[in-house]
Image (cartoon, rainbow, N blue to C red):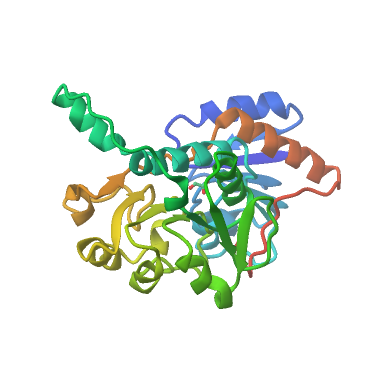
Length: 309
Ligand code: GLV
């Protein structure tokens, strides 16, 4: 079996050596933009070039090195009948839950104020958190959104969840579809986006949405930059519809120098690190699925290309 590794890592051997160890029966190669076809059976990819699908028409499945497959679905020439498999958790949901919790605590526990006080050698205690004042709304209830939601319910936050279809998660007040979106927003102060990027969810974080949240709202975007209408965020912050935003993803990454977000004190910027692809767990999962697929066994995480996730 031939496995092709196609990701822009300058040290691809960090991936191909463990792949060969985990899958000794495979001939593992690194994508060479100028090389010949190798008749690969499987490809392990992150944002691959369009030539991949022209040069390797015999691929039986493509495994994405991330949870979000929007980058892969955008690649021209992606055959519509190709089996595309996304990463399922592999340590991501725990990281995402930690990241979101951290961003919430920054505001709900006034951490910036305490850091400021430390710089002034000031010992001053402010009123304790009242969880009732911090209802959280999670958009997207897949593996990641669900883990974020249950982490927060375990800490006694009031958690709302919204997704396209109905979900039932213990302790979470769930809402579904466009009809219930307004109700979800009206009961939410901290809006957390974990949605996949599709044509339906693009630009979903906009002024109209921010205006429906509870006062002093906070936005945490760990989905994709394209979910957010950037000018609408600035307007909502300027008008104090939102008190702050924590952004881990951007329309253009790296976020360009001079972008207005950089100098805002009411925006926290992190460079797409809320949930990293963890090599060991990821390769264990993907090589296990390749082995099963090659044996004709069913595998999970196959993407519905028309749905977009
Ligand atoms: C990261 O953004 C991912 O999709 O896994």
